Amino acid sequence: AQSVAQPEDQVNVAEGNPLTVKCTYSVSGNPYLFWYVQYPNRGLQFLLKYITGDNLVKGSYGFEAEFNKSQTSFHLKKPSALVSDSALYFCAVRLVSSNTGKLIFGQGTTLQVKP
Amino acid sequence: EAQVTQNPRYLITVTGKKLTVTCSQNMNHEYMSWYRQDPGLGLRQIYYSMNVEVTDKGDVPEGYKVSRKEKRNFPLILESPSPNQTSLYFCASSLARDEQYFGPGTRLTVT
Image 1: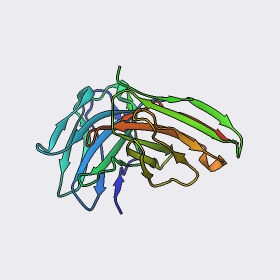
Image 2: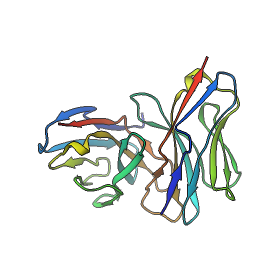
Image 3: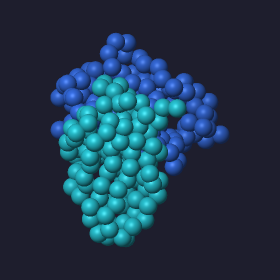
């Protein structure tokens, strides 16, 4: 079965420190990979995606993510966290071969950045 | 402004009373989906549509119906809501292989 795992329910970092939010996936084909962020009482906002090419992708608000095919991971990173980055983050995967547009989501990781 | 809109944003209803949540997008996207978000479970797809008059079940379709008569609209229908359908619902749209754009969400409570 296709699945996405975010092993940490919550990640706590101090402002100015680097942050990592982990994501691993299990799919039977080649994936498209996405990160979304959800602020309180808001919908999901797209951060970045990996389709093909360079394993390091850069996205909105200074976030980046590294695709690692051998470890089937797509960890989200930022060199210097801001208090305003505090939110709920979702990793998602879609199969390249899929024509349904369906995204499979992880369970989400709450990022708490303390001043 | 490119957007996905949902209405209503909040709804409290009683078991068995039919309801419809509307979804509309102005980006001419072919793909539209409905998801529900529950704590600890992430988002799960209810139904999706690849184009007008083309819909199919997602992972959790029981108790829901959808229709796609126009490209921009994709309403979610609960014919006989039950308390286990209390959740936060999101509509999303996308082009074929691009990122999905999400609506602001509809918080539904069924008592």
